[in-house]
Image (cartoon, rainbow, N blue to C red; front, side, top):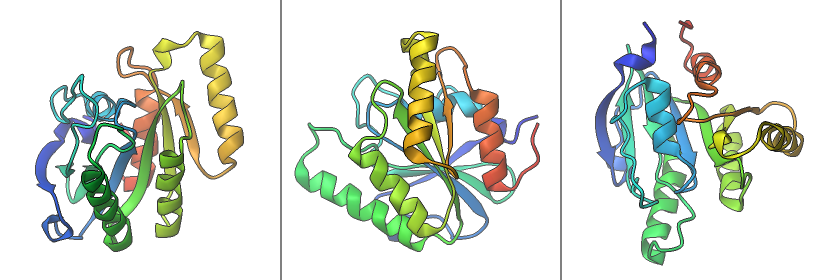
Length: 197
């Protein structure tokens, strides 16, 4: 059975003092508020209601920790770039995520979720820069691949790979169609140091 099938909610953190103990290994998920981050987490774990999804972008307002088998975790970071969020809230999220990247010794990797129709926003680039500064690998999920024709999706994939260069994994993903789930799990396995299915 996949290690992700045992995923369960641990806790939410609104400030660094509420982070879970800095032990084991964890992979964080980051993405624009409307990029489908929660849907991607649910699809990868096979747990429909694990991460909250909403038709209103920006619902992930805390850092949410999910337990996997052993001492491994997935971490759902607040969605970013949503215009209707008050400036004070955006500033709080930025400080919270900066503290997360600066302090977590257990951070083993970052998955950046990008809408394949609008990849590599300034916010996405900021997340990748924070991961690089923290010394952890990154993997990009180009979500909502079902919204594009096969040719356009392939073009978006190749363009994003060219823009990022070597060292960062990039793949197409669709939570709706199940596209790319095995590949995403394989990338997570490598970051978490777990054996594959």
